[in-house]
Length: 405
Image (cartoon, rainbow, N blue to C red; front, side, top):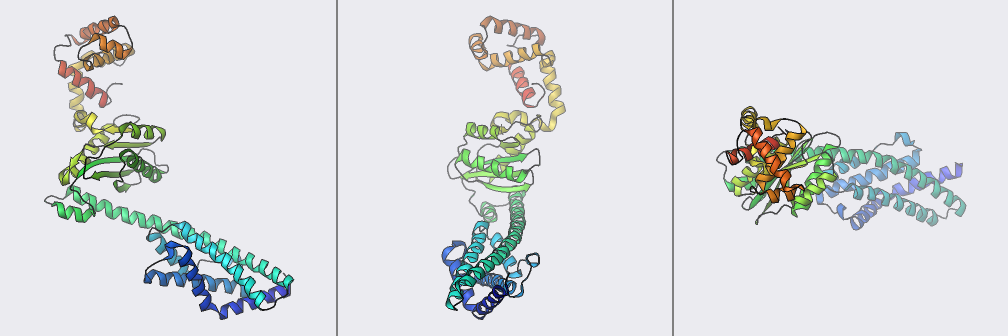
């Protein structure tokens, strides 16, 4: 770089420094006008002004003192403003936009200054090009630091907020003699309507938090309502869909979405109303999840309404297994032929003992169903009309508790 350009940049920096306060005001006014996220209250606005001033001062020092890019760091006021931006949930894109606008503004200010002071066109062009390159280098370096600061603070702030919300929800779930009004104040939401709880969980930790967010978004899509959520840990999220009327869950839509995204599992409770319902539907979801964990792999979607009886037995697995084996006997054998017999018996019972309907559902001949039913009765040692309810319940429990395929 020629001595003339060096001198021109130094004189440019000195002139701009002499007008520092006005330039800072001009910059901050532009940010407020163009970027809605920069319209803060007085306290944060003062911090924004300090951030702008510190960056402008650092740029002028770099131009005047030929500071190396390797020596550029994020000014403390700019770092604190980035943290405050993250804490308020404002977008990183808006913050970075300010730096790019500032970069463009500085180039335009340089051109205007050199023209106003009669710098020769060739020298002005070279000076503008060189100063723009230096400022752009500064902006790039600082932006890298700003991104790290913002994202670290966002994670820390989100974790703190989630921890506080999880603690409040646990208190509402577990505190005896807590009245409805106090519970609503603790959660900041009405509990007087209907509630549907769900537990979203991940079996494999890779990108778990992102997948938990995907799972809660699926709940939003399947119900048309935004859930109250609490991130419990890196693999579990609790959620409640609440409304004055009974929430409606599109089970088919939710299952399709879950099947498309591996590794996300959801257990859903049953509808409940008021504070008691808020608690009960969550206990339902817990039992449904506990049951789902007995299967490997766990099903993507488990509805308490479909596994309620079996879910009550999860804490008594040994006794449940003993009872099922006592009822079904050799019909529990793990071979292909016995599996077909169980499926036929289950379908036959589901169709209220209709050979014709069972055959149609299984896409086999009615005589085939008749033969299998007689064979199953031989294995059981009695007709299906004897202990029919116990047989049907044992088959359902065995399947839902993962005892049979």
